Image (tube, rainbow, N blue to C red; front, side, top):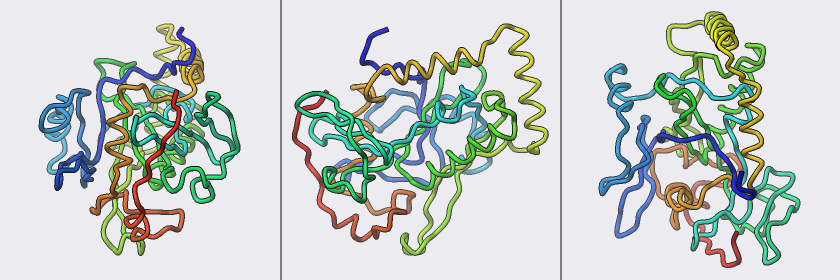
Length: 299
């Protein structure tokens, strides 16, 4: 295994609730009120839709606001990784990643570990640091180890998904990977969103099932897997070792698209989860904040 390279779950597609559009010569993120499932290929008109997108839309009359999924791992923290992240706007590479207690930061001496005061109190980030979460899920049955990735900088989505994953793990006796689950898009309005609807992602048991029925199915599938020789504990451990093999999770070729979608030079105004700032900074203040350009050595 190559040292310094994070070994992440194989990704065969993306889940988003928006897209990047060109406005006045600039490419800016524009959120939506529904999911979109895409491949990892970009065309002139954006990301190419995955066949699952059409199939799911046929099953959902109207907009795609729920997606039946399973997760790969029993450990909630392996399925959803969330940190405070600061990217270099020129190179698109991560320069500082932390959890509110400690961080890994790129310096002239290499990657060093430092205290992480969180974005509000961090002078180094100068307002450019955001929460950043990645959730890997399985859609369909054709590739049980191939995942679709949902990326988000929403406190609402990260907080909700973190809680749900931990709760489902607890009530199922640690059988999170076999629980029949469903991503669900929810909306709400707040004072900080000026009463406009903002959208975030939740995780629930699949439609038509009670929690008790979902747990029963999880136990049944777990028993079938064990009978076939499937070693879930070993899979979790392999993923844990892979994530820990590199300083930063994002691969070089993925980062430019991440920065373009979540860390644009100018925040766009739209009916989105990106409008919510649960750290206490008003939307107006965020929109008036100038883009930050970071200069320095990167890994």
